[in-house]
Image (cartoon, rainbow, N blue to C red):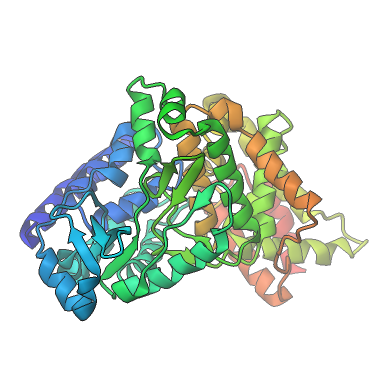
Length: 494
């Protein structure tokens, strides 16, 4: 696609987004993002994939369109033979046959089936030359786009500019197949003895910065299974008869594995979307695409607390004040640590009737009482829309002035991946929240230590953060925060 056409398409898309955004029509706005960026392709499709893995971003958008983001990527015309000869040089002789057309295409690369001289079936992924040629231009255009989105929805908890920064890091990782080869070999070793998970073997001598050769996994991607399910096919019977697989067992096993990895592993696959998960014969699944990996955030305890709140709310044991504080710890750790620091400091002063955390919880409970009748909490829980639940019930119009950090982005993507799979395959009621419960019980039973970070900071820094926050919420909703503002200002001035 020529640059001028991409620019025109982007401006048209942004115009629609601004129009729907100013009208407050979030569903139509998200649909405009999805349609426009799908047409643009390349890095824009990858950006969509990142957004779609934030499980509540495309609320109300047709799931078929979301699945197309992962599967229906257009193929580029490229000189495959020249690229392979140039990149692999004399090692090209190890290939007996290479299919002329790709059997799969992703946002960054397209994949060809091949056979080695020893008879091994392999998949060759080639980075799109057009991607690298237009990358700087596309990133600048995407940055312009995110700035406009932030202008339209400035109160959003998720700062779209932070999403863009996270995305730029992903682009750097995914355009270096040397790095992906090392990542894939790490996961191959990690899972080589697993009875139900296969990782493709990576042939490093047949790979380069722009070419990646791996063993071929012959199966059906979960995106295809979800599409078949949506079209009335009994996918359980299909995979049992064709592949000898127990689909429900594999879906549960996969969920437990990715959640346990988030809480215990040294490295996590950072792009575990449904298109990268394949059902294989003999009751196995294959996991592909290791271009993005990351160490988990230091404060895994915060993620555990979010899961525990989700389980409690699911069973009607909701403590919205506690949920707010735990969400604050996960999304905005600096503010949480600042409030905790002052809470503990004042707690020791018997001359003052203070309980800072409880007062913040009281405000959160009051906010929930104002919004609960307008929100279908149970439906959000069933869909795993925890972030959206926080936004719609406690932090409507960002009344608390929250700007979420993305230290937990990998965790959120992993959890959102699983939510999208069980939602698409119809296992929501069967597996929620029991999968989360089983993972937490298993970790506790095994004596696994969940890491965290200090809940406090230097007092001067805490006072500065809380003072700035108080000034912000004073302007946002002075009536809701009146009592809290009066008490906090009195204490901060002493």
